[in-house]
View (tube, rainbow, N blue to C red):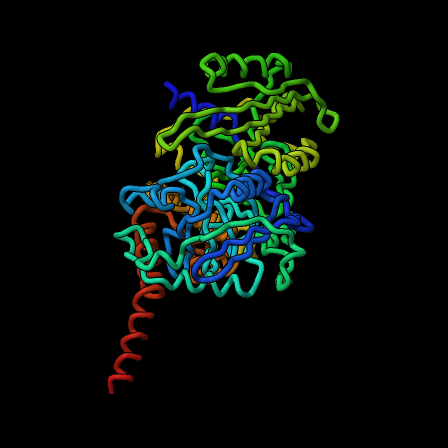
Length: 524
């Protein structure tokens, strides 16, 4: 029952946001000095990015919690992890317990945009975003995969600190099978942890601002989104990916904009358009609340705020809620903010969803999108006539919104070629049964991995360029179909098989022949 309620809430109350870039990182007047057998590590702290984490770290240090703990997990070129009270003398019966201890409580996961570069200090945690307690780790080598998944709260602040980090990171360990425990663990023992003023440290490095994940994203131009078919437009946050998901049923939103994943949760903003048929905003939102009542009664959902508002001269209604969902890794808290706007006898439902921890930080992005939202776009379709029923794969194949290449070429100079490919799909492939069957299978295959590819493209401009370069030859060959006359299944199969063989030759046969030729040349 709860699983069904969660699905309904996530689909009906959908989604997003980004953590803002700070103009200047707040650095604490206090530093923490860890004295080990391998040397000292001075840690400067970022209370502006992770206030509760910094407060907890200073509290535990002042209580001598970290004294005699060991950096129990050491992986060269990755990180060293410590802060487990079970690594203290008398704190364990067997070393297999190392890594399982905590302070007896957990703190919220304050995921931020600081990159996990060499020397960064971040909180260790379990699978739940809010499971951090006392354990922390120091990054030995830049690790982008950790960005926005763990709470960065400080960094090493002296040259000697990096030397100590290298000494501990290079200790011989038991390997993965033995939980990466250092064999000479005494050299990774924290003899004493103490709080000092920055003024007491004479050799502090001038490292400037820490690198942040979305600094490059904020420099990207914002591209307005316009949907003439449904009659609205808005400006999504810079760097966010906007797409039109396949319409599976009436709950599926018409448009979704997604940001970067933060702390295991991807923030999103969705837009759905429904016919009003003379219904008032109050009556419509009242029906929505009635559908949520079972979740409210069970305590899964809590309405935090709701009131009638005005958006750009249109009557609207706002509702904010907090959902608490029990999972195998703990309780997951998700916040929703939904705004229903009535205009042109249609309801425009705009929903922002994010984790409870990051909701407020990203809220300005959602407000900016609302401020830009316009219904002064001439609609070329009557929303009342839209069929929202679930269709069979055959009847629904022609209504798919995006072909496989659209995601890869989004926002690039390949857009005209992609539009041409769409015309080929609609005007040629969908005109025959074999073409329709092929596109149905192809789309099922593509949408099994496209969200991952799109996420990589947003985070890595170089990867996006590689994808664009790779698909260009295929786009060129597919465009051939737009200049031929196909009047039968046999002709469709003939051209289709020919293009498949042509692409196989370009992408597989030719490279193989080149490799063989190079190999033979070196052999001779």
